[in-house]
Length: 134
Image (cartoon, rainbow, N blue to C red; front, side, top):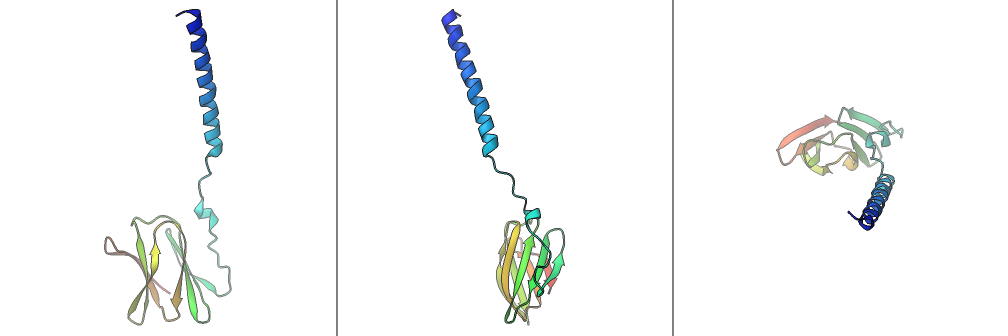
């Protein structure tokens, strides 16, 4: 290797070293902090009309009672094993689809005063995940 090649080789390696280290530093600065959903949600009743219905490792279910309709709040703490689950409300032998839940987070559904229980159902596997009396 001649002296010209050695100088070029050294210059390329120093440039690559500085470039790679600066890219690593910039990528660590640009990454976002992970979303901590478990700490973001307060599961304590906020309103006088809100009461906790059910709580376990996966769910916190609150019922906010109003004049005409109730608000059902489901907080999913951990992701369920099913890809997508449906929430049904039962009242006087009738079954009403309220909505679906899939990832962890807060879900709010409007239900009738006559709704006595809810069921979380896995449509793909055709199994009940939870059945909760209100």
